[in-house]
Length: 273
Image (cartoon, rainbow, N blue to C red; front, side):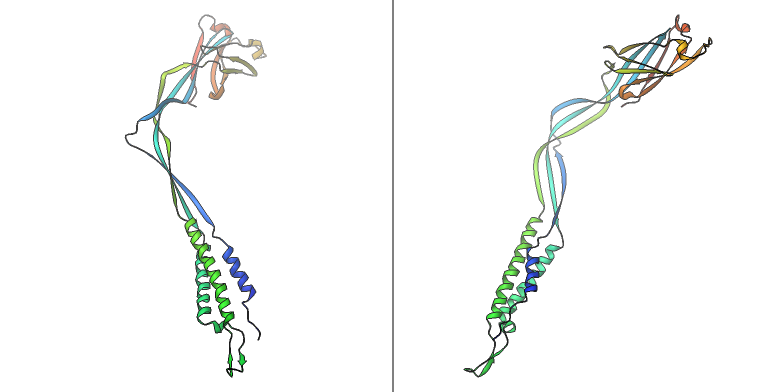
């Protein structure tokens, strides 16, 4: 009698699908909750913006620049809070195939156990019984194989369902409560220790502000500024470069002698940085 066995290719496909696991994608949603009556743990004042003001005075060839900082501050309170991180997990479509294939495999298994003769080998003649009979052992083996496969797929689906459950993780944290932006106390002060460059025509002079925010330059001779000496009063465009404040335009006066008796003064301020 020739025994009929399950098709190897079909079993290989079912085994491969049983080994496959559903891919889980996760997204985190973080929420910080502060109690309304929470008291600040720490309060600090931060400098959030600084503008540089340059006041200059030209007397002859000597140029004095007084640099001042205008600071804006913000009070920040540190409050005890609770952070909730909600991890949202979503399985892909493979989880539905796992449950579907498990139902098919268990259905075949139930049929194999209920009607094992449908999966039996070819009928053979039994002389003792004087009739053709089918051996039910093959059907029972097929039922056992599909039972194992179905249970494996069902287990994989249940495991993936558990993995796909959302989670909420709660932890203690510190929340920041920012106050309004307003002038610092004191609102201004000397911009000391700043590297300053004066660009006048093709000439560039460099200096550093002292502790009071003051820096002095000796201007180039008028003959170096122009090949021809112009005795009439005129304005000279110059630029001060003060670190992050960028370029600050100023004006000087030539001839320099016109500022000996009464100095030429001015003021310019950068935008907040």
